[in-house]
Image 1 (cartoon, rainbow, N blue to C red):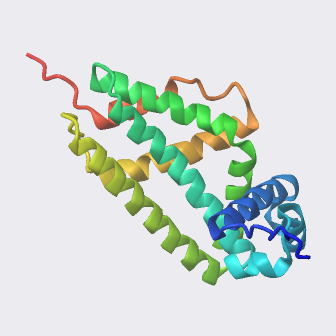
Image 2 (cartoon, rainbow, N blue to C red):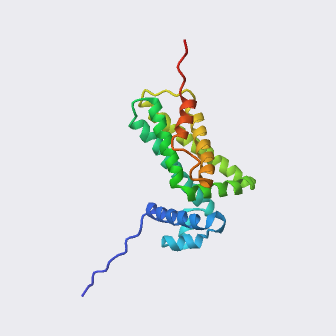
Image 3 (cartoon, rainbow, N blue to C red):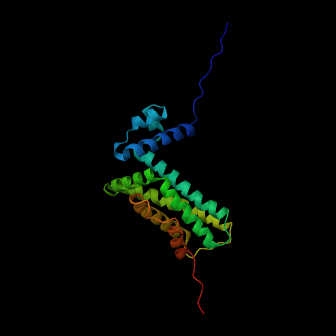
Length: 206
């Protein structure tokens, strides 16, 4: 007499990577980059350490995968604002600034991890070269997506989109330094006001 056997469902590669990245995010947040352990990440995700290494080369690759998640999230904010454009360009920029500022407060652990990794990369020529390459790819990705979104609107910026991407990245990272140290240091409207001054042309006088 035959018996039915339940065949375990093997998780998809995307599911495995997602679970590993979620576990890595928690491990990095709790211990920082230097003290985070791959075996702890594997255990928290429910896999072997070998499964982690078969999907990611190690802690550096995990960091960069999390970095791209963060960039995707923030780029999505910009694209969403452009897709549901407020009545004026000024209003759109103010909305984008407010959303990006709010994202800083929601991602304190990520910001600390980013700065910790940045310091390590600046002190290691090989890591620095890899970091620079990833940042170039990040800026190119943001530029491409925002250019596409802008093409669907009547908005025209006063500086090239790639320069805008660089400025926004620099501003959000810089403001996060102050926000991490002092919760009251960065007003919700500040980033939008600065971006409006950079990205829109003042009316001609006379």
